[in-house]
Image (cartoon, rainbow, N blue to C red; front, side, top):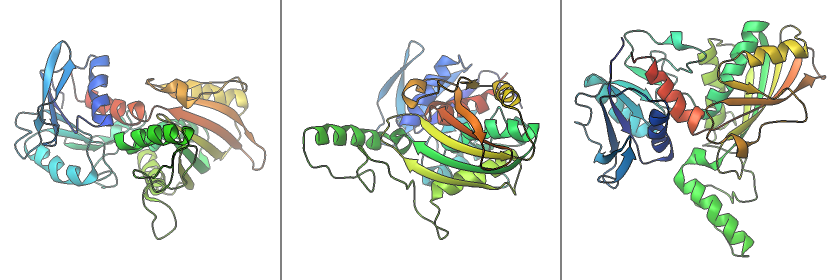
Length: 333
């Protein structure tokens, strides 16, 4: 189903992802008849500028989705669980950035450059993957298509913006406080984040993995349609304001020359490659970019057909808002 000039709602518009969704709609000249901003009662009445107009934030309620064609959700899993079905019943297509629907076998989990075919004409709910998964799977998809993947080891270096506004403010306040020799107490995180790395994102599960690590593993398998893919992950929060980095070790099923590997990476839509070993993407430099950046490309001599990659992307943009809007674009004439 294709929609002409849809009425679009951004649910959770005042958070870091919701705000970025509004920015991306403007940047990409997304066609629309109306943009509605929805948030909690505390934010109702706030004004946002968009296309030479002022949009007023409305309180989210059960009647918020009347005549809405596309709803972009930037909410918690709990709020998505409640309001996505309401939006669906009202006739809206919901694109949900929370984790609630991602592993539902009846809901497509989509990165448009990788698996747009997962969306059927009858689908009214589409899940937006985890930010770390989004920047990983286009690369894995290309390598799987080339010669096949035997095993993947991912270590993430995730910015505090992935934890929201309060986390970003905490990094700033702790940094200033420590430089002024003041004691700092963690609130948004379990431990001090300034000048520190925390090898825990989300809660621990029975197998010792955190929920974040399990998301990367399971979501990658679902998107790539490789349910038995051998993949493991360690997720680390680092004192960086924005953009996630990943150290990715891939063992392929057959050999690829370095030239062939780099050519394959360069062929991926939305991916920029640093082929010179002395140059590499930095988190501080990629913020605000639509692209996924790959560098530090080299062979892993410890295993046959092994390769190391450094993958960096803006987690609020490509890792969340942009990917959601790109999904919405699949429904728009």
